[in-house]
Length: 284
Image 1 (cartoon, helix red, strand yellow):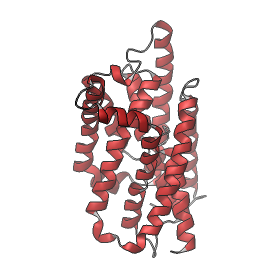
Image 2 (tube, rainbow, N blue to C red; image 1 turned 90 degrees about the horizontal axis):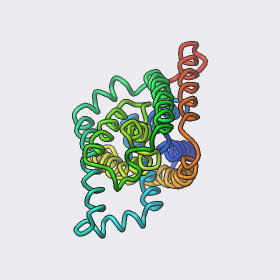
Image 3 (spheres, rainbow, N blue to C red; image 1 turned 30 degrees about the vertical axis):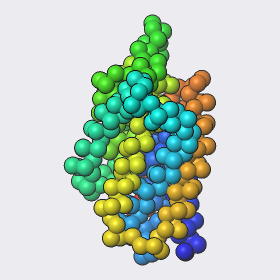
């Protein structure tokens, strides 16, 4: 395994883990990091790098599975007898479908048109503005009444469908899957805690399905020699995501997402400015 390529894989894994569950877009950050590191090249094709970026998401999801292992075990154990467990499973299936269907139909076209630094930067800025608007709206609403849905156990199938439709917007790189589901959930009446936890749970089928589908679809590209590199990225994503999830759960207990909105806006402007002035040669 090439040492420099392994170091790049390690950095990519850390970036994935730190950004997967924050409303700042892991895909967008991976596209930009890939461009800066020149991760793709003679030793690692663009097609193989695309698979790598999807597969290392499994590491981030395993971190959520570990953090919520007791709750997941309870839900799976009660799927045939406990109404709350059955409701959560049904809601996850409903929320999973919109992005799964649209991704299956349009993912190739989206990659061709929107997987580039400038498109990501624009999505960063637009997403940041949406978060600022939703947070202001949420504060005004909270002055008058509490959230309609305080817990994931209180969600209806219609709530799940709305969050699922919001998640579908994350097919646009730079939008953020977690941002779309958390902020979308808050728009639809979920508390910050309920929206965040449902976003975590929804990530499990969504990203595992994407990983399995990508590995199957591009299996001809991969070989046993790729295993060490993919392992480095996946383990790095697991560790950094675990730390990030623990931190985020503490953070949302007393903070909103405004800081992430401003981060997205400033970062997006910096990428656009450096792209158009030529300071950074962003590679598509």
